[in-house]
Length: 121
Image 1 (cartoon, rainbow, N blue to C red):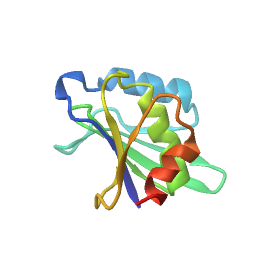
Image 2: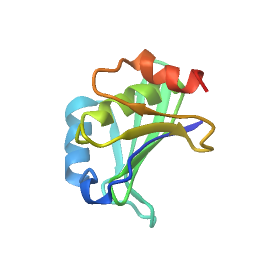
Image 3: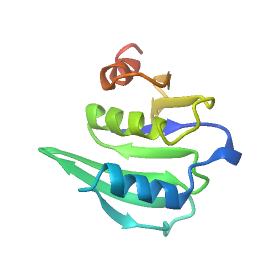
C-alpha cells in the first residue's frame, strides 16, 4: 500500500539536498535510485530494506510530500522521521493514497501513535 506524509505550505518544502543528506545520514542502508526525479511529480526516489520489509519512497518535486510504498509499520517509521525534517509549526498529515484515513503527525509521537492514525479510521 502507498502511504503519504504531506503538508500544504509549498514555500516550506523540504529541499532535495536536505532530504538526500538526511536519508544518507539516518537510513544509511537506503539506496538513492534517483537524486532528481525523471517524472514531473517525482523528485528524490529511494528504496530501503530492513529484515523482510521493503519500502520504495519518493518525494514530490515541491518538497511537501513523501510517498511510501511499504507495509504500514515501516511507512510509519519513515513518516515520523520526515516529521523531523518539516518545521514543527507546519501540520504534517499521514494518510494513504486513497485518503481513507488521515491524521496529524506531531512532535514526540511514537511509531505506534502514527500506526494508530490508520487503525483509528
